[in-house]
Image 1 (tube, rainbow over the protein chains, first blue to last red):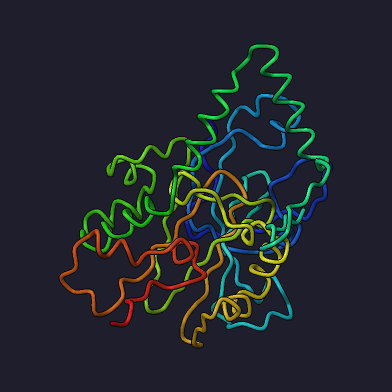
Image 2: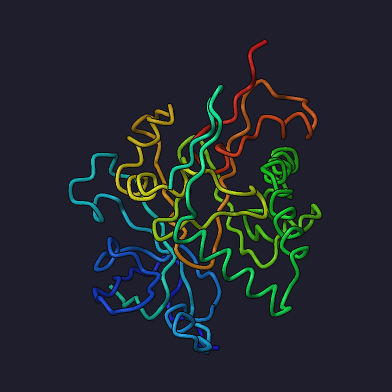
Length: 95
Length: 206
């Protein structure tokens, strides 16, 4: 199993890509920059599972925290508000 | 698809099966016909699903309110802490998020409707609605106000989008005025909605 590449507190950017098929990275978060909240363990890649393949080796999964006002430029809440999302490692690059 | 309950005096309405209902019936009959499982297996699974209620989640919350070391274990590894209380939650990977005087947490699944079923049972219809799923992540304070929850500027709203393998449970704050209560009495205050994050546990007025 691959060692997780990122640690809690690391700044990461979500890859802005639009591959076809089943993907667990919501559109709204692609291209956004956040911070690793925790490493969740490694799991079979859902994009591969959806194609009836094994999804192995498992891919590290993280919870990433994003400031809401960065995700939504017209966000009407408070500056401190955040959204936290699970994102697989191949969707993240160092920021 | 909207199902309407028969109103008083109505005879009940019959509608043809929807596309997905028809698919379910067809697939089930095929699998039963091929002997992969029986009608009784289906009935048992449905009964098992219906037997999971938010009472399980409430018991977990009440224990965390009364036992600080349990709370610590719960926040560290939600699934293991539930199993300590005898709840078989496998294969769910549970992350418990704690409300504090400065932070309010709320759960949504924008991609589908992931939900901690082993602890809360079957999700309410609104949780699966497009409106909740798209708006809770986009304008959480406004949606929370529609649930009659208003938070001041000093409180951070944390929305948890359940997009992959984790499932989430909110650990609400223990309400004031419950000092000395038993775990069972505390659990009676913990509603399903308070563990999703769209309500707060309240002590009923006498």
